[in-house]
Length: 200
Image (cartoon, rainbow, N blue to C red; front, side, top):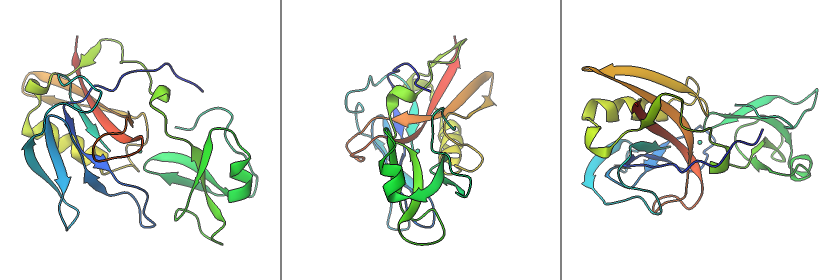
């Protein structure tokens, strides 16, 4: 299912690195305030880094990675997930024959040529801004909101792609949604992210 293009406006980002055989790991980010992973892989705030490349600096988001129509099907294939995006374990050659899909190694049992076949990440697949919500200004993001967003980012099992969660901070209810974020100075490709919204 193709969804309309939505600019992913960010002010705070934590990025998810490339897939690893043992699962996703937060590794870098940019814009507003940054959380970069140190040698131990943990996220540590490092201060203001200016606007995200090509994205307005006044909105909050967290970089990080739903089944869509027309995906691969194989009665004998197993399910897999890369950064919270579901796929199907298929031979690389079979996945290569599917337009708009790519193989990711390290997420399927069996021979090396059986990999997780999933949609190519694309910000055009992000849903529109949720009705009744707007992107949160950077100035409104608190450390507690940051910690919450990072926890969502690091939990692709409970928060797969396009999932949402809400939490109240003082008198303000905040909505977080896992989305694709565009390439930035720490990520050469489109990557999993968490964007924060506030009520209109």
